[in-house]
Amino acid sequence: MRINILLSAVIGACTLSMAWFAQLYFTQLQMPMAMFGVLWTALNLVVGLFSWLAHKIEDRFTPAGTVFIIVAILPLCYLLAAYNIGYFGVAVIFVFYAIRGIATPVLKDYVNRIAPTQSRATVLSARSFIIRIAFAILGPIFGLIINVYSLQLAMCLAGIMFLIAGAFLFRLFQKHAVPNK
Image (cartoon, one colour):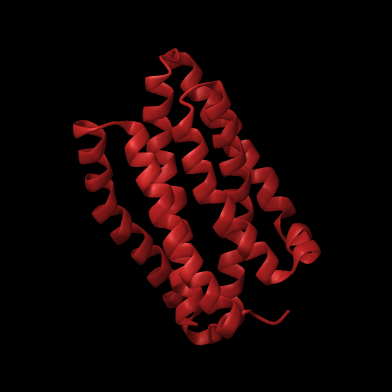
């Protein structure tokens, strides 16, 4: 259960961090402020659509395949968006949000499947707490990197960090924590 919670928390911190980066990304693109609301609405519609489709996607790729896709694509999106601050990067952020829509319900479901009924709410609260603690630590570090160096460097480092953490936890997930249907 610990592996599932940690994997879910790392992915949660990854997606929460991108929500923070995206606003700076749009600002760096000199996007009109009026477009921010339009983009946030569109991004959240993408999350909602892919959350709705998540279990169909999981059925097609298996739990391990689905987690591999999540662990591989989310950090890759950080790297691609950082490489090209432009409208291509905005499209990459939409891909990120689609994967986020898959990741959240699927990973929470994996925790739900193995958590004892009497402690399920506590386990999910612990997962959420870990995500917030991780972001409370990482957010100021990313902010410092942005202020001293650049948004691109901060996003690259975030992508690399989430790729390493995700890959490590994915290997453990494959060996010990793939849930049964």
